Length: 239
Image 1 (cartoon, rainbow, N blue to C red):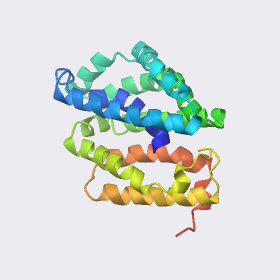
Image 2 (image 1 turned 180 degrees about the vertical axis):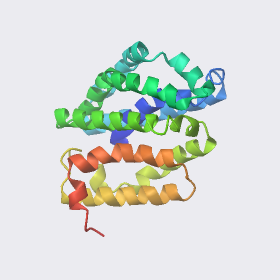
Image 3 (image 1 turned 45 degrees about the vertical axis):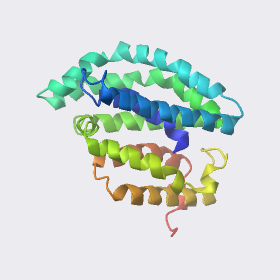
Image 4 (image 1 turned 180 degrees about the horizontal axis):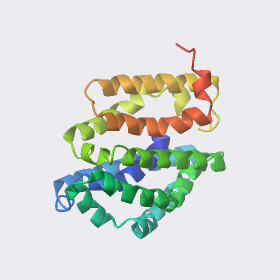
């Protein structure tokens, strides 16, 4: 999952900051979200240096944050979106209006996606395509069931699920998955390890994480890796 931190950060930008009400963003809830994002960024910088030999990709991610924010605002006025999400009596109409705009805003994350591709350091074109699919999948989850996830992320249980994944993700990851093989060139061995990793994550999350939305987010990140590497074929009959 370390390779997917930037996608999680995009998610944090789009919905993590919306977890609190407008007045709460400035207080403890907002500070808690900011702290989590900052911690992920520190971890990702080290991964980027280890993986590519420099922090060029990480620097591009950082420099892309503000332009991405300004770009998204051209499609969706986020302060109004926050208010509408919390006050609307017709969620279907609300998300029928907003979701096409969010889909159009995908172009705003090109800089961040390119930065991640540089961090991975190999097959940059293929990596960019895969990451773009992840972001698109996340946006699809955001719009599913008339934006149900925006109700879920404000609950303590959702944050608990995030904490479980952060605490156990590295424990589940095998040495083979951690190696620098391109994420777009998984062979039989790594597809098998990916399946074991996903099973381990599911078992950890199953203990106390019952929100469907969180599982759908994990699926949104895994599906492009599995599909683009044909791991769904390789792992069909594996134990």
